[in-house]
Every structure is written in structure tokens, then in C-alpha cells.
Image (cartoon, rainbow, N blue to C red):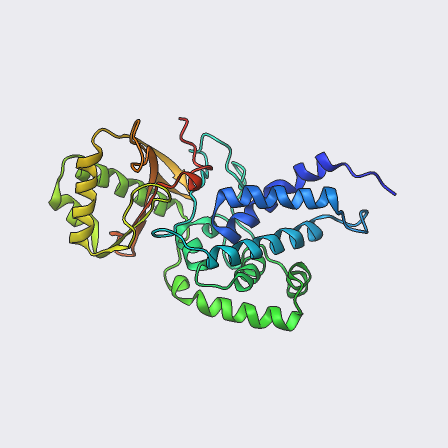
Length: 312
């Protein structure tokens, strides 16, 4: 029997498995744990045919663990609005991109590109899917698995994969009409919108903020253990009052710009604060087709910030 070089195996497969688990859960901390648990399973109970390629077996284990994690999450109570965990991506990240190496095209032959599939818009759209639908869609439409490969990875029949895939695509129809493809143009427009946003916020310029926000803009805050709006704030006037009010109460804030989930975003350091006030967070803008801000995503929960490069 061939000896297993576990160190080399883990080095080869860690990035791929982490990216798969992150898309499955939308949470970097969960992806860390699931990837580690998959390798622990490989150490404790390796497959019978260790001379065969390991990736199919590792993917099968990781996907089973991720689906179980999703089911438990959906049965549990979450205080406030749930948002994905931001991750640093691209050349602006101080830490290496978690899944897409610098200089490597973020594309596969699938329906959705790798970088698009870590966008907040895409990850939030995935929340409408069941764990099995999410798994099938990711394997088929992001990682370009065949029907047979997806069936083997998920322990499903090929017929079930086809039906589940069809239902998953149907549930993604609303997202597909407003695809969030991370082009250079979108990155530039998002960076310009962030600059206008900061200028309007720091100068309390209501007219400038009103011109920037869509009339039906949404503000979503994931505070976790910290104080945050527990419901989606909808509408330009309400969002403006919230933003200007928070800015007045928080006072001095250190701000930097970094690529998160494929687009420029703000890293916010509020200084030494006592709970329930968060010490830091991220803010991401989602632009509509008219160029105005359609959504503001604020993440403050400490467990959601484990993959954000704050040490700049």
C-alpha cells in the first residue's frame, strides 16, 4: 500500500475545498472549520482506495459536512439580519486572496465565474436555495461538474441532480436578471460611489447622499453580538437618517478601502469601544443598473470578520 503524504495532499486541496465550503455556507469561519474537519476525516477514516485521486472523496466529505452545517443554521435562531462574511480578494488584499491567487483568471467554464460567485449578491441569492439545491448549483454552474460527477459527490442519483439543478436555477432567476459580474468597469464605478458616499457622510451633505442612493435603497446590518439594526431598513429617507445618525454617534472612524468579495469596500475601525458597540466592521455598496446605490451591507459581527485584512 502506498504511504500517504498528508502534508502534500492538504497543501494541494486546501484552497479548492475552502472555496467550495465558503460558497456553501457564505461564512469564512465555517469554511475554515469545515475544511479542517474534512482533513481530520481523511486522517481518521481515509478512503479504502487511497491510490485513486483524493479530490472526489474530499469533496464528498466536505459537501456532506457543509449541508449539515446549513441545515443546523437554518434551524437555529439568528439575531438580526444575516449577511455573508466578507473576504479579501484581489491585489488590494493585504493577505493573499483566500481562493483566487493573484494573476489567475477568476473564471471557469461554468455558468457563473469564480469571482462572481463570492459576491454578496450571489451569496445572498443562494440563501433562497435548499442545502441540496445550493450544492448542486455550485458544483454544476460554478465548478463545472458533470451530472455524474455531481451525483457522485452528493450521493444523489443523476435524475435527482437534474431535477434539483432545474429547481435551483429557477430559484436564481431573479438574480440572473440582475447579474453581479465583477468587471473592471463595475469595480471603478463602485470605488467612485464609495468616494462620493464618504464625502457626503463626512460633510453631512443630505443632497449629495440623496443623489447617490436609489429611492428604494436597502440597508442591511449584521451585528452579531453587537448593536445593529435588526431589520432591513428600506427607502432613501430612512437609510439616510440611519447613516447620518450612526456617523454622529460613532464619531472619529478610521477608514480604508479594500477589495472584498470582488469589489471595493470600506474597512471601518471605530476605535476602542465597549460592547454593545462594535469596534470595527465593513461596509459594501451594491450598485443598481442606474448607477445608484441599491443596497448598503454593513457587517459588524466578529465571527464574520475573520477573513478581512484589517491589519493594513
